[in-house]
Image 1: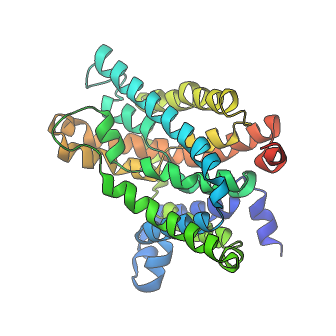
Image 2 (image 1 turned 90 degrees about the horizontal axis):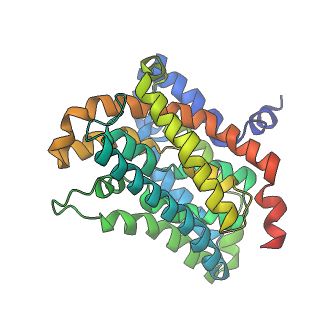
Length: 319
């Protein structure tokens, strides 16, 4: 029975398929994932940050010092463009529509949709389509994959600022893996095949935080949010990747996918910025629906872009 072969036919399948399975379990029989012990630690949201840390370490172990410039250039551009679009979107929403936003999509929901990235999905897709530099760029993207990013973007000067420790915490596993592997080539070789294993468990952990019933709550607000991401944000990211970095654009698509922490971001921001509290509940539901859409659709958009413009495996010889 060729299970792995069938899984690999799905874009980013080594992570997406386990994610779908645990999402189904969490939707219909969530108690199965909450029995405690190793089961809960390995196959529920409780293990998400641990597996992300492992993935960052493995990505660092495959990064040579000579690749750092390219890693910062690729990952840095995607981060800068993402933040610029998010700032612009938040400013335009507040200026022309106010805090309530448009069609039920509040400024809170719009800002989180544009600012929250998904390093896990990015890593899964780069495992299928990217080169080593693309994979290592996850370490840069992870710097903004925190609720502090939309909090800062909303521009409320209440002394919160940027959570520098979140950035440091994201960099430590990556840097540790890079330093060890560059000090001993055997360490690089040891972890060279570890990425698919970690991605499998990361998919399980991320899927266990998704409730597919959220799809039934989709409305006009989600059409606005998904439209902004797919019809406005995504073309900007692809254009920047192709024109500035001269890349095929697949990494830009993967980096545009909404992050899992977007679901908890409204509550965190509402606690820090009381003026957004009335919109926390609706924004949380909207993020859940948009997240489910992005996680299932973006792998296929990435596959389409790869088919049209090529992948890192093809273009790596020219970089």
